[in-house]
Amino acid sequence: MSYSPDRPDKASRRKRGIAAQRKSPTPVGAGLKWRPDCEQIKPLEDFPTTTASAGGRHSYCKPCHNARGKETAQRLYGGTRECHLRRRYGVGEKEFQELLAEQGGVCAICGGADPQHLDHDHRTGWVRGILCFNCNGGLGQFRDSPMRLARAITYLRGTTWQRALIHPGVYQMCSPTRGRPPSRRS
Image (cartoon, rainbow, N blue to C red; front, side, top):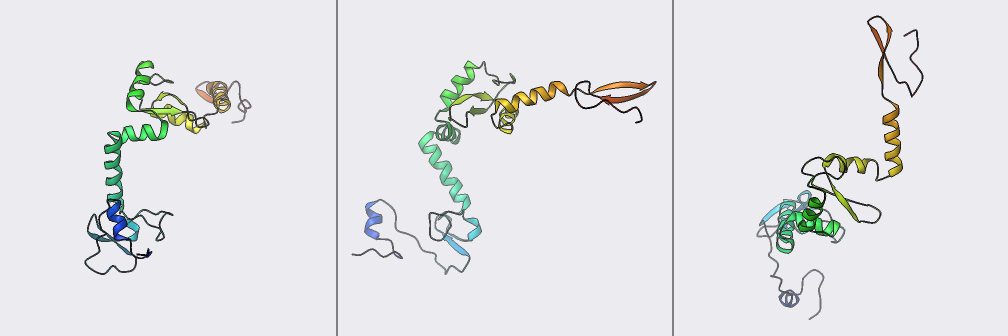
């Protein structure tokens, strides 16, 4: 029996343990797609895009796609958090909790309670520590660059604006170490 691209080989599907494809009970119009798991005909926009299939859309609608992903994460890793930590950083929840205990249960930068973000070096992929949301975001905004962070520290130290009395009851904001002094005319 020869392979036909428009009809999957039933024997091959049986051999791989895949059930026969179910067909839509009603004709599927243009811009629509049949979803056997939901047993519904849905618009193409309800299906994630992919370059892996000729039609450019996944075979599962977004809700089914999400449900299948959660089921797989639960089955293989025991949950979505464990799955995320393992796939992205190569550590599990157990290692996460051990690292957090080594840090004293606080953010490695600010010392805030209950940090939840695993920080890693984007160049090497190595885990550095566990941070709170704000510290993790701050490092990301500075692109993990010690030079940028040092410049930010210098900037903060050199731009403390102070109120200067220029006339009884009249103050002007000025910085003693940055920029020019306030003008006398203003």
